[in-house]
Image (cartoon, rainbow, N blue to C red):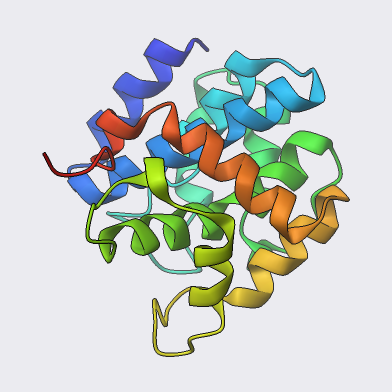
Length: 187
């Protein structure tokens, strides 16, 4: 599956602009890590774009991400992609084994948290966001309450990188798509 096909499928299944932007942010982070690790950027981008494609219509733990995975399997999407999508949600019981699977799990929550960090900045820009600002916000339990901080720190451990390096890598990836993510800032 190409990135264009994955994007078309994601937009067909998802109407919410915020959820679409989340999947684009995860795509950006996956691309950045693929470059860093010398992996297939396009394949990793597809996984990022599709990981939550069924979440809007099937948000329960009984349905997400199973509905999407079944659909993708019927479309002939390779198992390495469908398995990565299953492995991104801890509750599925599918442990991430490959680097692509580990990376998807590692960046998912962090992308949402970084987006929240940008939204409260006076500039509303990811371009001036620093790792130290993200770490400071992680200590504030009332900020972005729904984001599990342990998932973010476990993600860095899963990839064998420091928390600071993990945050910076995801910021770097998201900066490359700042306009599409609505994170380029105010004029």
